[in-house]
Length: 321
Ligand code: SF4
Ligand code: SF4
Image 1: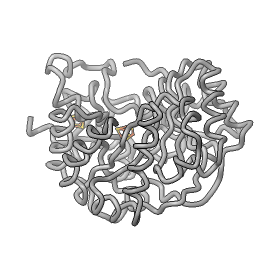
Image 2 (image 1 turned 120 degrees about the vertical axis):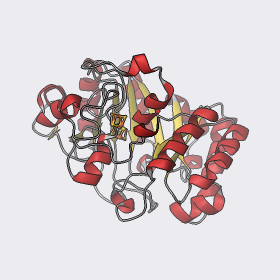
Image 3 (image 1 turned 90 degrees about the vertical axis):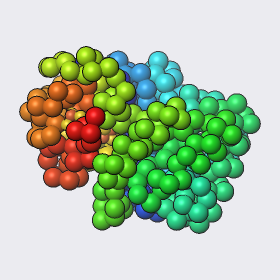
Image 4 (image 1 turned 30 degrees about the horizontal axis):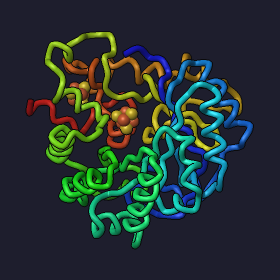
């Protein structure tokens, strides 16, 4: 895994019509990305060799049809657009418009009672109707769940529901950030269970610790050269609606701003990006871990716990292996 840009997450607005307890940045109101700035970021990302562009928010569909126009701009530059949405506004647009996207990712945190307690009354029904709407229109749909202690028990049922609906399910761990900053997050044991369940049920899960559980040991123990794991600042970058550049949407430590710098110069030269790529210098338990080149721990989890982007991943369960 070389440090070349592969995926850009573009947070096109901070506006959102929901107030989910799991939101990593307490989105709800705030800036919307300037259209010229968006085109400039896409130009640069394409020149840097990025393949994927995730249009995210806030809630992108609060911006009317602009996300669809932006998806076409992404395609014109040879990249692949994905839409992330809370699923409440999907049916306000003709289903044919969603063909601009490779896939549409809709957030759901579990079966109805669990989901609505986290995302708000009626959101389960609305999101599920949107899944049906898109699947009927032959659009590739993913359901994305952020897994913590309050929804772990419903994930197997959600996996069955996703299968029944013709959607794929992706899992990520809940971090103590944004509106979840003061709540309970997954214990090491629960994170282990989430990854085991993802493997058993063949779900998507890009958690770096999944590599540790699933890859042969000889592939994991490669000193020096990065082999996988956390993509923050390694193969992924996030540009927020005010053009601040972050290594990952959840790692909200600014690396620079596109108001004064180019994406390429931040990518190549920012001290923050250089630090998150230098895994041998991470704090315990990651620094010195035999699996650090293939995993690296979640940098956002480390930062949320210690305030240090190069700290150890506090949710690591590797000693159980
Ligand atoms: S100590 Fe860090 S790098 Fe090693 S397995 Fe755990 S999270 Fe991954
Ligand atoms: S910091 Fe955490 S959430 Fe962000 S890319 Fe790395 S593992 Fe994923």
